[in-house]
Amino acid sequence: MRTDYIEIFQKFMGGGLLVVLFLAAVIYLFFREKRKNVRVLFIYLPVILLLLYFNPLFFGLFERIVGSEIYFRLLWLLPITWVLAYTAVSLYQSLKEKWKLPALMGLLLLIPICGRLVYTNPLFSMAENPYHVPDYVVEICDDIKVEGREVMAVFPREFLLYVRQYSPLVCMPYGRDALIYQSNSFYQLMESERIDARELAGYAKAAKCHYIILAEEKELVGSLLDYDYEEFNRISGYVIYRDTTIYIGL
Amino acid sequence: MTAVSLFVYVFLQVAVPILIGSLFQKVYKGEGKLLFFWISGHMSLWAVFQGITVPFVLGNHRFKHVLYCMGIIVLLLLLFKMVLFIRNREWSGLLSGVGGIRLNVSQEGACRSRIVILQILSVILLVFQLVMTLCCAYEEGDDAFYLALSTDTWDSGMMYAKNPYTGSTTDLDMRHGLAPFPMWITLLAKISGILPITMAQMVLPLTLILMTYSIHYLVGRHLFQGQRESFLLYMVLVEMLVIFGGYSTYSVENFLLVRASQGKAVLCNLILPFLMFLSLRLVRNTQKGKEVHWSYWILHFGVCVAGCLCSTQGGLLICILMSIVGLCIAVMYRKWKYLVLFGTSCLIPVGYMLVYLMQGIA
Image: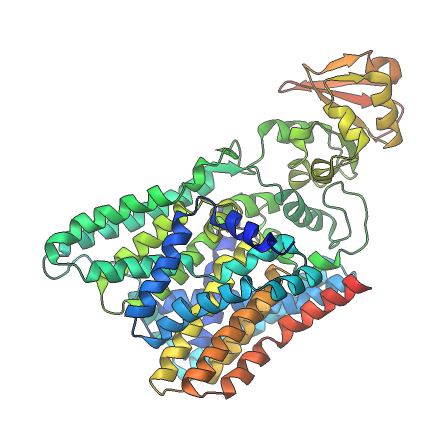
């Protein structure tokens, strides 16, 4: 759709205020800025770029060749931070001495109002270790790894982003791709509220999993112990089951 | 992570780039030369790394070949720099760059208190970001891909031979193989002895954030030459805008603080801004009727190649940026040869883009 680029721009704007201020700053600099090197980067570049960005022909070409999901990266060429800071300082310089301190305070308050603190994103948390992955990932991966060879293990969803970052020796039947595409039936079984032990054992053996890791509170219909699994360990609220029919060099 | 690892890392990421970057001392003679050398040195190393790594990736060679080639080339560059140092007695040129970043409290007039406030604020805001980078973890989905690539290569010695999500063997992923920034993380990890995950999540982001602010510093010095209060206010505002850049997950600022060690974050926070800074200098010199030193174009070319290391689409953004800037300069100053020079800088990025697109068609 030709209006995709408008939606992408709206997503890029987010809350909107800083980008609106940026556009206002470009207009201000157009009339007030005399230095040509500043005009090239802070006025002509944004204007030409935005004309290109909102050009339906350019968007169509870009979408066909590269894809529209990364079209927003064109907007990285807008020097938003520099233009906003430079314009604010230029305005500040034109003030009388007695107004400078209040203006300084005003500027320092304006930015938090118009922007959003990056660290308020709910995906931020305190790092539990130098790897910036949850401790339970480190503990379980260290527990199941076998030096000198790879092991295959299936994990609950909350592990999928982290296991392969931390441990190259622990493989998985599916990873983050299952989160994205949501079509992996093994993943869907692992994430269902009640898991049939027999079905789970079937999937795990087909994927040649040495280990199955489940949360302790996960409801299992039946017992994995009936399907050649043993309870290997319990760590941080997770149960590690090991397939006794596969030799892993222990 | 031991003290020795950290020392090796600091040597790799500070001393080596500064020495190599000082090869471009004729490009920039303003305040903050040391920072300019530092950034230029990194860009040069990234350009060399890109040139070495991609052929090895495409040829399914082992990572150790990249390591050896990179080591030899860096040693040769350092040797070359040492020879220049001894022959031309360039020690003063390098050391004079130190003065440019010294914080000076003795100031004139009524603005002294504001200057002190701004100096303290700028340091606090920077330290805040660095501490948050160390202490906060972010659930970033793309790390499951890129960091896993680095960790796999660090362990197995093979590049792009495994599916990073699962660990199973796979065919070469051309899209990511042409922009092997994760291999740079592996290189740093291998040489320093720091695990790739620690390197990418803690150590390298600190360096990249400091590099980004170095570029902001250089731009600020350019814009507000000799105006200390204005320069400091500019830096504080830039830091505030970065910290409060979470208004969108697509913003450049969000990428810096959330996923600093991913190639695309390096592209939008370092490569593109540094190219813009070089363009600012070029336009100013052109306006004054000065010709830039030929090493400017070598550096420019290197930065464009470094951009390809970070992202396959980096080449496209670089070409668009250079086209717009080159066109503006050519029209404003009738310097049509700059179009040719800019175009030459873009040859490698265009080449990478064509290889990427042809693979997609095939």
